[in-house]
Length: 322
Length: 269
Image 1 (spheres, chains in turn blue, cyan):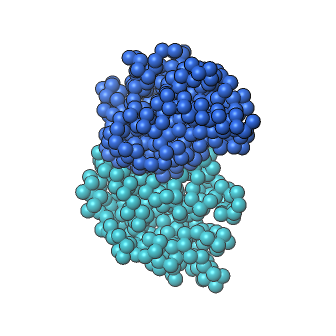
Image 2 (cartoon, chains in turn brown, red):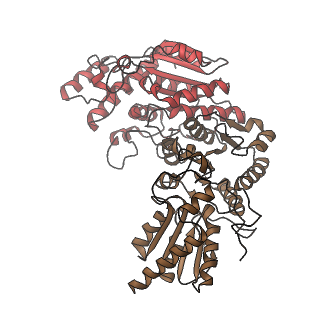
């Protein structure tokens, strides 16, 4: 497999988001974008120039932004509420709970620059808690696409899904991994590589690192299954249980705290349905130090080589149980 | 419908509300009594609504942001034909859809779920903005408590309503001067409200919020800016011993108090 980490063809998933949004906007006058002064960081300039009236900028006021989104949906519109994931989820979590999830409002929440995309800006701007905060809310699918193809497919899907959605996007460049005609299915993981010795599960910016780790493992004669699991809620229980039963060990990695995110969501089902050794990679429950997103992912043991090492250690635990 | 008829309906709603609080052993009776005249004027005179088509796209929107007085809304909706009147007897009972705060996915006529304070006005701004974007001519009304105005999200919404030029939005502040634990003035005194709203670019009308002949014209007023009605009301209005007593925010009358209150409300029917 080509070196996907250093591949020159890296894509900013925001571009895929706005390309689809503008196409949807051209087809459907009910599509509106709502933002918190984030026209630039949400890449909504093109949408604004085409339909200035349909770009509802509430200013720096995230609680109002989410409430306004719910009201726009009540009035028959299809709002995409965009803001930096750290502020969209953290500042307005109660609005997301009451106005969006509990009210079952047809609002698409787009968390931009999630994870540690704003690495150097520090923990105030890191969004490594958002899976935990959002995935406990009923009615709210939580989705973190792995590349520009999945981003485009997920935005297209969200526009046609009747109900709230939280879509967690990054600005960190990622290579395309899924086939160009990929169709997004909620709660369905994608098998990117098969193997019998261990399953590696990731989403967002970590999926391509998992593929690279699987390459390293293959050189050692270890067959790693790689699942891209964009949907954190609802979890693809069938894929998780099959992974546990067929490979006997599950290693997860995410641009999120190790508390309450993708790994935790998987562990909830592994424990109940098919207990096997697991390891959850992520930010280990601390405020991260200064550094770029790529630096921090490496720092917290999520370089391909470190993931491969963690996989080998996990497989050893599996063997010791036998 | 004329003010005298509306007054009669308001008293009937008050009496049913009192009975339901007494039977359920819970409720927010003080704030319910202060708000019921305005709710009556909205649902029996001002709002363009179709009880048999609660999601009609042309309906006027009303958001009860002070969601803890849900019972007053339920009784009003029942009297107006959105839900069966006998269902009020299930208030707060296990599995009743009439819980302590309104649920838009279960109760016809409820537009959005409220309960945590400071949520209804931003949602109402979105509703009014949607009408502007789609060319719909429905109006949006939202009622907050005066203590609720301490939530900062309201002021985010107030600023954006003016920025968006929402002349189709009416905010009613139920200014009964008391919040849960104490008087507004002894807690975080935002009163007087009018100058603050005007400074944000709103038109303001001050009324006696328990007087139909002042409520109806204020609700029917049309202008060029978002409109705030500062409704001076009395907590516990209509029941002499509850009036302006902070204890009656969510106190429940005992049997003797219930008889006195019911008699007072029935006298005028």
